[in-house]
Length: 145
Image (cartoon, rainbow, N blue to C red; front, side, top):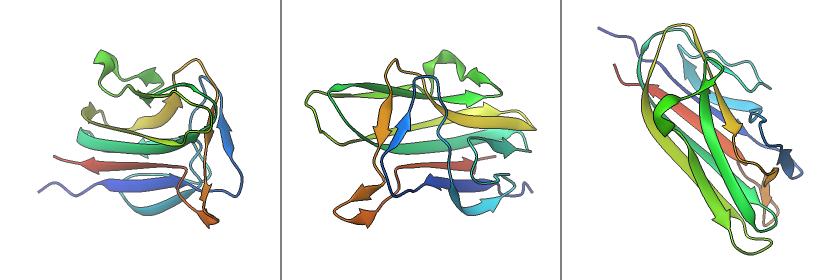
């Protein structure tokens, strides 16, 4: 019987967090981790076991009107077939939007996984709303088989 593998990482802070084009999200906290390796703060999760994994990510993006695009980087390459590319468009300045993405992909053993701004703009992630700290970004991974 296969052993479960799963993990949850998040990014919290006290000030808006800039993410340049081409930069990875640096997560600084984690929830449960089981057969997923993460040493905060880091932009990289290590997946020791091969299999099909469900991955979900959420970003709270603020700032001027623009477009934001993110994708998963597996072993230093964007996941092929556009399977993990997600984006949003803010049509007015000051709009705060949640960008969510999910996919089921095969991950080889001893792989690395990152979430990257693959768009052309710098984004601002928002870690505080109404005086309360919130997750500016999170990523969940779960092994399905």
